[in-house]
Length: 307
Image: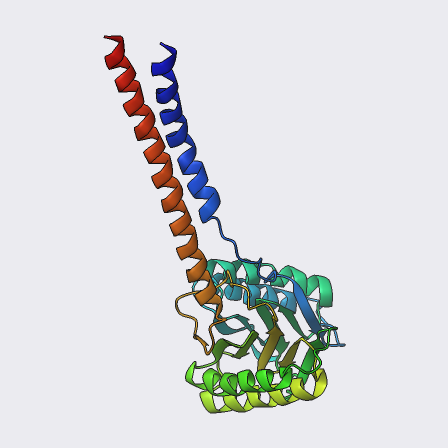
């Protein structure tokens, strides 16, 4: 009795826990991507609406509703609301590697955040890591597309080790890639991860000029900093140096324009990890099945000896 029950029990236990083992091993092992809904910066006009009848508030509310609804199916959208002096123009844009659902999740919170941070001003821009929203009333003073709105540089500096050569090579690829990528491009080169994006209605040539200007600002403003972000009015760039290799990015989409010019590519490391996991799982399953077969065979032999 005891000898026949034990192999069957082991057999059932193995196949009960195998699915759990598969789920644990196949879980993503990549680093968590930066929270795309984290605030980067805000820009608020000093002048507030003079709105005794509420007409501006109604126009702004209608504009926000239109922008949010479009974020479920587009990564860039521009619209107007109201008429005459109450005309308000606004737009949103999501980062090119966000999915549609992440884009909506990012944009949907911007109207409330804009009101919280800026109130009812005649113009505002709120930039998150994954998206931004801006609006302005008719007649608001326009600024140059090359004007720098915000920049941040990492607190750690990299001395020597060819850092600046790596960074500048990656920047060079980025400048040409954002043109061929029609406004969005990301790549990695020898542990240097770079990304650039232009506003959705900017032409390829102007986009290239904007990104080139942002790159020059990053080189001057951030120097040997391990990371940096530069936001101009019509484009932005970011770079990060990973001495131990670029982490696999979890927010990507088939439609994003990206390239890798080195073996430290995020997608490459992800594929290698998947192959390794598959080999390990295959070995575990094979050994487990062999053990079960041997136990079952031994059980049959014992039964035969009993007879």
